[in-house]
Image 1 (cartoon, rainbow, N blue to C red):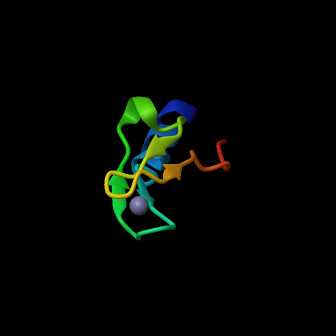
Image 2: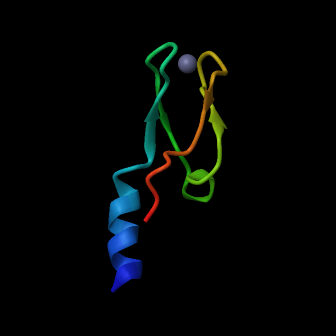
Length: 52
Ligand SMILES: [Zn+2]
């Protein structure tokens, strides 16, 4: 039950917007809990804190 719910929830959290340049970066599933870099400017995009 919870596995399905969190899978659905994470599907909506796979995009991160760069606060510096506004570029939307698609986050791969394996990187969703990691900090990734903006494709455009290299700014760090940390994982969102709200993880339930
Ligand atoms: Zn950027």
